Image (tube, rainbow, N blue to C red):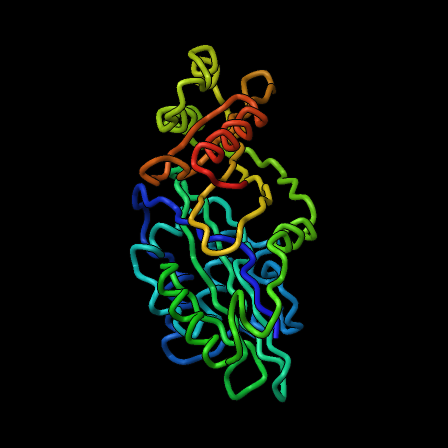
Length: 311
């Protein structure tokens, strides 16, 4: 029996609501409520059982398509609230991450339980998380999917599945705990992510103003940058994947990097680097903005050391 947690927990901020539930989401929820199973190709994408980020639900899809696939294959998709779906309609980009995995081989067939964290970057600059549980502990040798908007609910569901699998869980069990660095190795195995910039000419100066207004760090971009971005012709947002080592046990540290690239008059480009984290005394989610990616990384390391957190 093998058991390991491949990443800590995160908690995205909820700083606003926009939009109505999309027709696609309503349609997929309707199919789920009527008891129809997950789509064949999407539901079978991970039938091999190897832990890793979801393929069919993530690669080459828009955020709306990604949400639709998650809702369609989840047996409890109808439990995702209208407020969450409305916010997801404004998502600009998404990323899927392996959160935990377990496989027990001493039964008549392998029993597997994996969980994934789906991160969505919303139009207002905040993040929203969905958690997906994937397991094959039912009577059929096929994966079943469950979807949750709350991590505590996922933990309870995961515990229920672990009880079905049986055997020891965690340190001190009959199985050996896999090394803590394996989560990072799995993410690195996915290869570097080089997002292609597709500038959107949609109130880019307003986007720059909102971003700089949210920033809480005093060493951020100055007035010269603010004035320069008043003439921005387009902007592009990218979630920057930075695998980090995590200690054993539950890790509630949230640390994300975003690149906000702006197309300037005359064809020039300028990037602002956003650090979103909860590494402070009260654990609230804060935003910091820097002109240089390295400066953002140094700031993250500084906050981590101050809180005794290993990034």
